[in-house]
Length: 212
Figure 1 (spheres, rainbow, N blue to C red):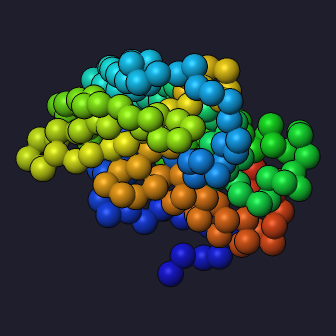
Figure 2: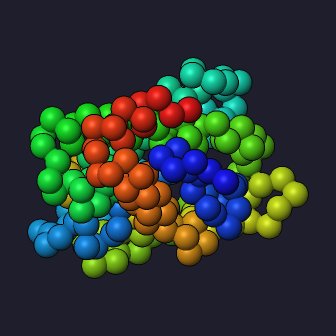
């Protein structure tokens, strides 16, 4: 049995089905974004963003890098294509409302590194995989981009990327793998971790920095 306060692995239907860009990653769509102005973003731009992200992930997988060098590459991809501040705030949930600006900045940095290491450790399983962008559609205040992953010896599976320009740039803020909301899963895990630390956000930040 896992000791209270230790970092947990997010339960998923399949390890491979939770690992597209870990970045994810993992935001709870419309409720997180709130009221929005009219989108300047269009379906072609949303598709293009995810195509570039997938291409960079493929390059990282095929680079031959391992350990910290690979994790750093994934962190750079996450930073480039994801709305990390929004994702981090959503993953932290209600605790973000009482966090100071300094704490949120520290948490965002720690969370970004934690996610990159967490998923980067398993991305080697995607060597030889092929990712295809199949389409995009507008969903209220964001675009949903559908990709299909083809892995060796396995049935293809679907991943939906949610893309918004709310930050002032076109960025993704959530991924849904076969109906599993990645951000929701991370939010549940982080909530349990914070509860185990009696709501001490500084302790959680310190532990995320050390987590491998």
